[in-house]
Length: 257
Image (tube, rainbow, N blue to C red; front, side):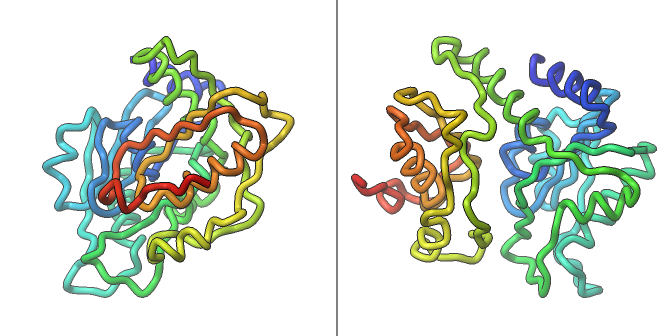
């Protein structure tokens, strides 16, 4: 596949030993598996192996992925109280030992995506980056977002060549930090991202159409705020593509503004 060849080539060019992903859209890109409920992690090695860690109740779905090795973890063990990341780390550590993973440089997406299943109560949130640092304490974590975006764009070019797509990393950037939307209601989400994004004018081509790609469309708060920033900066039209919707269309309708 073009995607697999690009990822292997990217690992070689960047001198990364591993590429690790936890955003649902990137897990899907690497493995063909969509995380349904809870946290999953996908890993690509320089040798071309694809590894996948999923909650144990999604094992049946993950078996349909094209991962070479699928490992499961119990998100809410009854015999001990754990942080959200501990069961994932244990599964990752076992996988690392079994396949002999060695890494000095790891490519990893910058966005946080650690959202435990709703049925697994935790006192502490978790961090995917921390799992990697615990597993490989001396390794360097490098941003992999551009490599993943280019892989997705190439896949789309194959399916819809008439769109004439090209990746524009750095076009949008955050003006300030925002809270995770995991525990926010729709009103709070809109307030959380209001005015949070700006356009890099040096990367902008006025009048062009822009395609925003999001993994899950819930209330549309983030996509709407990004679209507003792009329109104010001179973009002709903004399209939004999503891999999943989380609610009825009429609930997430955008206002005319």
